[in-house]
Length: 314
Ligand code: AKB
Image (cartoon, rainbow, N blue to C red; front, side):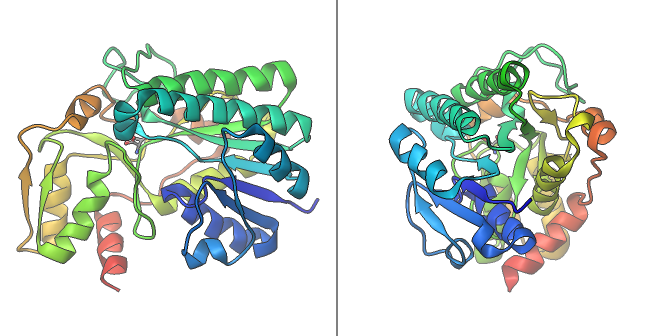
């Protein structure tokens, strides 16, 4: 079957890299990028692009009608930090955007849908170390509980309507090709840019705040591997835990110092993102992803740091 893939929210951190990889795999014309705003990013503009607002049902219907997709990746979302500033908008976009896409996917008989969840689905009463796939989940950020509710919708559409929805609970994502967009884990990308530009960085999270992170190359590979896995192998239809690399700002800074010995880190006295980070896991157990679809991570802190610095220097 010839695939026709639409990536909704293509201009963001994951979208940019995903569109590039999917086009390399399926061909430029087979992958339609779409976002609420146009972009001058050559990666996105190397193939078809559509302006679309996920909250506009009419607009979305035409997107599906025009391209008759076989696969949808819905990435449009408001992340944790911005979500706390615009809670109602975050809920509306993260929830109704998903429901529009799930309904249209059924109407247009889309074969597979990908939707990203996050480590933000866990909360202060979830185990913080090696957080399992199934445990108490009491997220206290709007982003977190919109993702948890979204997971329940995904599983519901799979069970009730047989829609093949697949999802990953991404850790914080780190890449050099695209900027993060308003999350609690953004420090781990900004630090590299500031280290190279100014030799110093003020972290908005405290020195010992451990969070699970993942290098973008691993995250994109995980996403495509999950989408290519045979349906019968997938036992999780809410969203898969992915472990990634767990480190603190102090540990990341020490690793950067190995390449840039003069680099200095300082820490902000107060930042509202600290409270969000304090409610999230420090590390994640991804046994289900390993057993169901053979997930294996490639990057650790050392080779991720080296690769980031090498690419950002170019
Ligand atoms: C955020 O920090 O909000 C995101 C996430 C972990 O989902 N990067």
